[in-house]
Length: 366
Image (cartoon, rainbow, N blue to C red; front, side, top):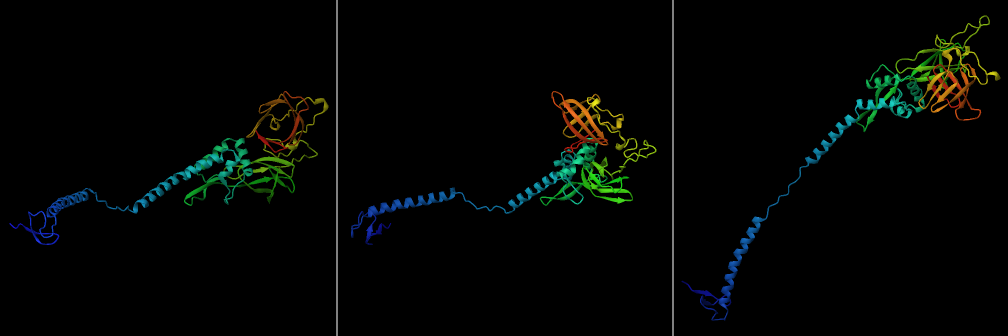
């Protein structure tokens, strides 16, 4: 075997058994030991490095699909559209509109109604309809049914007037106006509707007043005659006759009737003015059709006149006295129970089934 090697320091041949180089004195033994440790350490480090690489998980950058957020947005939009279709459906809107229109509260009624031209209807213009509900409770049910059934044969029609959010139909109740036709024998008549002047058109002796929405109205002709008229919730208004009574010299009893055939003209009523002798009396007309006795009501109060001269006004009671009764004008003095003094006096316009307080135009109905 070759036991020779070379000195790493001077390069001279040395024996493997030499501890030092005989030429330069380099410590060969120490050199050999150092080389031996390095040869052992290097493979171990390599092994450890390889093990570390094997144990380290390999991560990959996964990119999210761009379709996911798009799909989420589409799902949300579809859900919103379906929910909006239900919330703004015609049937659901019709239910809300019918509740508001038949509530009798003019502010709620105004929120639901428009004219045929799409204009808003004021609360004051809807008051006659509210009064009609009070006079005839079946009217409100008729209106509600016509709205819910989407009837086209009444004066209340559900129609689309716009869009919610630019997508969903917006519905309102279109109220169809009707003309009020009056026939009268009063020359060159002027007309007032609920105390306000109104234009009219003469058509061969029949006067057509400006169109109005359904409701209960009071028509006055030249300040001489007054009559309560109704614009119906379905169809056209009836024609009303409001004549001034004509009494001939030959027969004072030949009176031209102006109201319904079975009723006597207001102008044919006897005029009552109390004398000192009957100051403590109360007046009771002989014709039951002309009497104000009984209960009268509106949306805020109820007043009742009894035939024994007593009255009740909501929670107040007392006695009353008729001071005068000229045509449709009645003056009444009230004496409230538990209070002393001269009482208080009010003047009313009495017209068939309505009793209007002249001072503030509050009206009660039978």
